[in-house]
Length: 79
Image: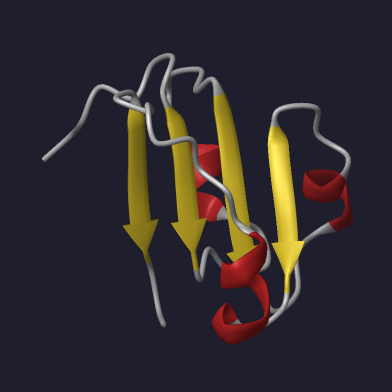
C-alpha cells in the first residue's frame, strides 16, 4: 500500500546507509529524520534531512517531535 506523504514530516528508524525508502519516494516530504548506525555523507548535508547516526538507544532521547504534528509518519525498518 502507498501512503500520501507529500508535505509530511517522516522518521525512518533503521533506514540503512543509503536510506533507500526515503530516496525512493516519488513525492516531496516536508522533512525526514533518518536514523541508522551509519549514513551516507550526502544525507547528512541535505537541507530537509535530520541525519542521526547511532543506535536507537543513543539516538532516541535526542529526537523531538512536536506534539501537534498531525502530518507526521514513522517507519521502522530493522530495529
